[in-house]
Image 1 (cartoon, rainbow, N blue to C red):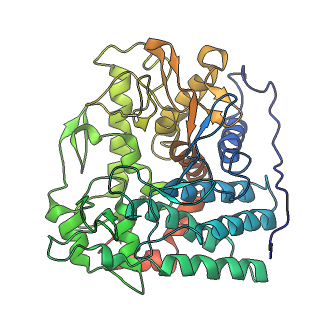
Image 2: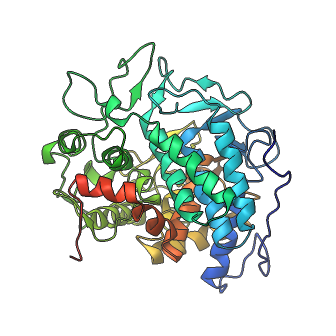
Length: 435
């Protein structure tokens, strides 16, 4: 039986002048409306018609999308739908129905110890290996999905049967994950990224900080059905404090992680919903960490030690993205002259002035060549006169979520206030620095 009504319409806010060629004096709130909506529509109008799941990639211009769905991007897509409802660009019940359809599809995807794989086919929902022997669970992708689901559960808090049913379905998905089952027996305590029923622990990837997967430990510790022991966090993630950094880069002290902080997605993905403000554990002040990471990335592009064409003038932001010669992970230590709009725009809560300057620069770049129906192209290399032909879902989503956190704190409020998240933070020894 089809429980859903057909059709999905969005109500686009208008903007004087349109794209390209937006007047430079335009109010930031108006620009952010357009930018958020365009990127959010990637996950609605641009999603697979049959499953409502977002494609991993879509071409900027005409052409077929990749027949792939990344599970983490589904979580970001849920956040995007919530923004559309919050800003009244779609009706509240319509957003609820959309997420209900996503749950219909998620319930058909194979799971392993309750966790989802990294990739599935958009058309068949069958598992696709990212790398050889990656034919089972991906705990980090699952965590990014659950991040979005928990926000949806907290957002749809009404007493209607539709919202109550949605919350129950979300809880079933979340409760099914065997978090403690991803602590490898006989190994040093840690959550592990992958597990396969055929190859078991063959990929042998412990989740250890600093990286994008902090959210996995918070969710694992907060689980009622299969929580991890806090030791797993202190030994696995924090490496008994050895994940600290403390060095200064471009005049800014980085509390944790690799030199110069690495690609910016490392301190953006988990904080699309987890509120880093006033949040500290035994090792790191997380607000200081994310601000320092963004500041170092910005300063590197501004100073441009490698002399790449177009830096600073046309923006900043190094992260994992498309590149002229294929996918690459950009950072100050691996800088190939490729800027990605998601890196700067997802830094709005941390460096608002610098992010706004980058946004306006991206809009005006070559008379609007970066912009299309679903927002900005994934990346560009101004020194090579190259612009990506693709949108990438995993980079589209954080733009919507992080701009919303900058504007209203919506997801930081919903997610961090959720009972299971609060339980996880307490068990791991997180504390509010205001207390």
